[in-house]
Each structure stands twice: as C-alpha cells, then as structure tokens.
Length: 251
Image (spheres, rainbow, N blue to C red):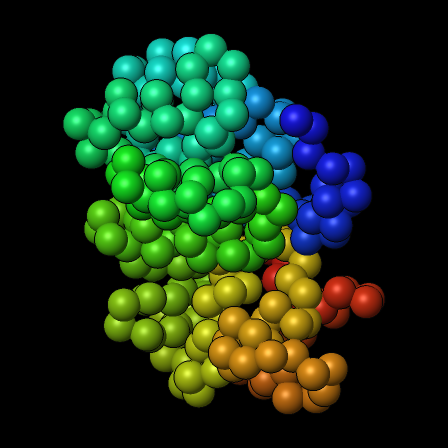
C-alpha cells in the first residue's frame, strides 16, 4: 500500500537541509556510530526516515524486501532495526521471529493500527510499535528510548564547539561551562539531535514543556533567544517561517 503523498508532503517540511558533517566529526573523534537498518517496501518512507535519523547522528541503511532484510541482518553490525510488517518476500513478523535470538532491538513502523496488531507485535518481542503516519520528532525520540534501554546511545552531542554531556546534563562551549535552565537544556537537546531539521513550534513546546500548545509562542521565543545568546548561536539557531526553528550546522 502506497504511503499517502499528502503525508509525505507534511513530513518533508521537517527534513530540510540535512547535514552530513556529523559523520566526519564522529570519525575524527573516534566516536562509535549507531547503525540502523530500515526495512520498508516504500522507498520514500525509507528515504525520509534515513534523512531524519542521519541528521540526528545515526548511520542508516535501507531495504525494501523481507528476504533482503534477512540477508543484511545476517552480515551483522546492526544496533537497531526499524521494521515494517507488510513486506514482500517475508513479512515483519517472520523477520522478527528469525532475528529475536540475536538480541537486536526492533521497532515496528507500520500502517497496521488496530490494538490487536500492536499487541501481537509487542508480544512477539518488538521493543516498540509506531503507527504510520508518524511525527519524525517522535520517531527520533522512540529510537533514542529503545537504544537507551540497550545502552547503545551516545552520551555526548556536538555542534561546532558546543558539547553536551547528556547523562551529566553538562554543556560546554569552547571548553568553558555554559549554565542552562532545565527548559533551555531540553530545547538544546532537541536541536542537537535534529541538526538542520526544521522543528515545529508546537512540537518544541509539547516536548519540552510537556503540555499542549495553545498558540502563545512568546515563552518559546524567549528561551530560544537566551540559547542564542548563551551559545553564540545568533546565526545558527534560525526561525523558519510558519514552522518553528532550525539549528543550522556547517555541511
């Protein structure tokens, strides 16, 4: 079943100007890259997920066939699999059953939305279950949550001379400590994990303030202004018209 084109258009505004600089930076610093396999018979969906997760610092591969997925999995070296259920060759349930002894975490990403489908997927051993259409920010958050459970997440995020120690909640710029409030730190994490991605105002508000967005954006704007000032990001943390904000890093 084809993924609705209007849904792809809705997502595409969030995946603007993706960076590849993180790959070079990780190689220079010797940081282990998390490898994710995307298995979905719709190539546009694979590309969309790939772009978003690559921008968040992950290395992605994708296949559109169940048997191809099994062949790739057998080669090893994967940290997480994002798995559709309805696939040619072998369906997602068969693939999950095959790889379960390998201990690789799996997130189902599927259009099968009924409760019985979710229950079946989770009972078979999936670590999470995400229904299409999904929000790309939620996807990144779920990926991070699963990887944390398996102790596979990176504990340091970097953008230029700004370094975030996630576990210690410590931020430095040019080696000097930067003091942030809890809300500023929450915003910073979202921007650092979604470099060069335009994030919607309501998603920023709902994620950091953990509440509904009612259209009053001054609180968000003030926090972004303080982040710019404290981190010297006047030209990096940019407003995106009718969307929200984007952290721009060099490509």
